[in-house]
Structures are given as structure tokens and as C-alpha cells.
Length: 209
Image (tube, rainbow, N blue to C red; front, top):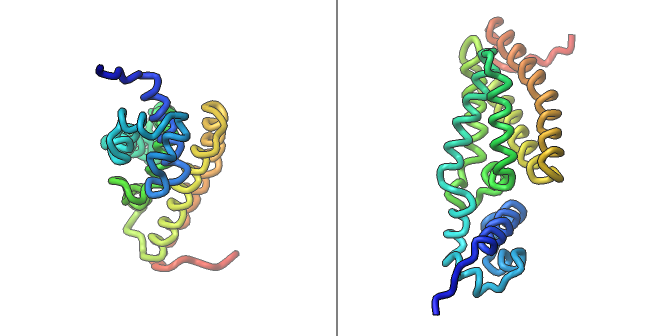
């Protein structure tokens, strides 16, 4: 007799898998761990997904990173070019993060061993590229170094907020507060680097005057 796969059980398994991948990473998550988190037997889990990779692909689709990159590009362009759609682009990116909260934790901070293993570094490179394009001239290696550091901290902060937010409203409030601190700081850094470039300085000024 053919056993019927139940949508509710599949959803419970996927929810459990996302929690496990976001908490333990792909290498640290086993099918037995997911089964326990989903409150089902490992044998039942294998009825729905034949392997951990198949389960991972189901909860974090291959196009998720591309969709995120598009929203991120639009958000950053609206900020750096000071376009009228800045609030809309911010709301769309925030909505995406909230809709895919745990999947974004994996992409940004728990991607080792997955097809997205390079995504955390690619996220940082993408933001550095946008920042460099907004400058009045090419940054020096020292300027690039500080941009790398700042945006890697951005990556870690976003991942932590998405991982620890207690609910959608709380998480949105944390992200909004983070942006209120981050955006003025990035504008100040951009002005600092532009000043360096205008003066022909290829390092980082260290005077405190």
C-alpha cells in the first residue's frame, strides 16, 4: 500500500532543517538531528528526503542567493545615488530577510560545505565593489582593507540579528536600528576615503586633529 506524504509533516521537517542548518551548519547537521528536531523518526524523514543534500536544496533553493543579490544591489544603489526609491528598496530587502530569516543566516554565516560556501565572502566583495564605485577615484589597498573589515562586520551583524530575533517585529526593529547606526557611519567612511584620494594619500590618515 502506497503511503501518503503529508504536507504538514513535510513543512515540519523543513522548519526543523532550517533551524538545524542555521544553528549547526551543514557539516554539523545530520539527518538524525533533523528528525529529532522535527519530532519524527529518521526512517520517516527519509521517506520525504532521500539525503541531507536533497533536504538542504529544498529549504534553501539555488536561486535564493541570486534573488538576494538583486535586492541588495537595488538597496545599495538607492543609497549611494540618493534615489527616490530608497524607502521602497529598504522595505523590500528587509522583507526578504524576514521571509527567509534562517536561510539568510546560512547564506551569510553557515555556508561551509554547501553550494553557497563562497557566499559570505562574495557578499562582502559585493558591498566593497559598490562602495568603491561611489568614490571619486580608485581606493588604495589600505582603503580596500578597511572596507573589507567594515562589510565583514556588517555580514556578521546581519546574520546574528536574523539568528537571534525573537519574532518578525523584533527582528525588523533590530535591523532598522542597525541601519540607523550603519548608514551614517558608512557615509562618514566614504567621505574620509574621498578626502584621502583628493589629497593623494594612499594610506589611512592617523592624525586626530
